[in-house]
Image (cartoon, rainbow over all chains, first blue to last red; front, side, top):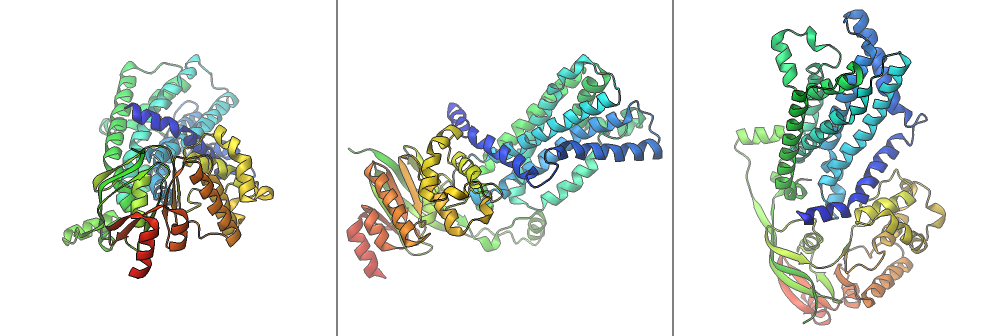
Length: 258
Length: 244
């Protein structure tokens, strides 16, 4: 065990370099630079809130903020896991030549997405202040659902990266899957609007639970229920364990497929 | 008894034939339905054993496809052998295909730190080597340009300079001395010789028997994945030349 920790420590500089590179190359060639991270969800929020408050007339308080908070969480989930799944394949040329702990690439993708989500979290705060939404003390608790979600996504990212090495076409399927899953997550609608059979399905979706916790502390000014916290803890832990176990078992064969 | 730096113990490496390699779910399902997922394999290395002592310089020689590069990759930790084991004692600097770790959208300066991190060096360590890297690669005026604008010679100069910083215990060199003009090649050889004098152990793969002769004290001669000979470089280099 201590051997693994030593090895991890040795490659921490690599992790920071990789994350820095991701952030740098993403924004180097754009005039607006890092502002894109803020603008992108904001523009989506504008479009979605116009569409859904006029067309479908959802009766949700502070609807733009409701949508934006949903997007912050859901976009992190879909962006981090989709980029993590190609992490091994995209770095094939490197992995073939130098020894690097392979999970570093998956971890760096998740961390880059974490930086993006922190930026869009700030965008949410700005919108909340601008639209005069009451700010509660509970928002200081936002790291709890976020960290648990990061752990969940790391576990899932490890699983996806492992499968993708063997079956590349999974990447296309996963894009469809995340689009579909968004409709099974209460990003644009309220849970209370759902018929009970559908409610059950949406509630099983792990992302729903993290999102509800996030909205509780950010918008509702309440601390999430203990049961929600326990479910989130369990889901994150189980996902991470599955991811680590699968990745550890298969990683020596990656080199034969990339 | 001298310090053993690398111990290769009955290593065999088995590959499945790439013509049957399946890399998409669609293909896998179709081939499974047609019962075509065959498992044909071959051995790239077959029961190879040798030891390298501190200060030795070992050349791996053999024809194309004899398993030289596979052997180096196993020693570098990139691949795990199917059978047998490899133990390495000490720090290792791999010079396997230069420039693998470059991101072409970053500047040369940023790539120095990225590449250093890939080799396991912290930013602080890299800063102390930075001047030396710039000087050796002769790229002073270009350090803040993006690497994608570099010529291939410039890239290999930079890569070589980064890979050979400090004083690693073991240096792994795979066919990289054939890059750049002759003057730079001489410079590289000199740098490697310098490291050898300071006690670095060298593992070297090249098709140029002349280079192997001048750099290595011992050779491992591989033939179709089997070890044909292991011993003094001068003797076996001569024999290798005549075998062809």
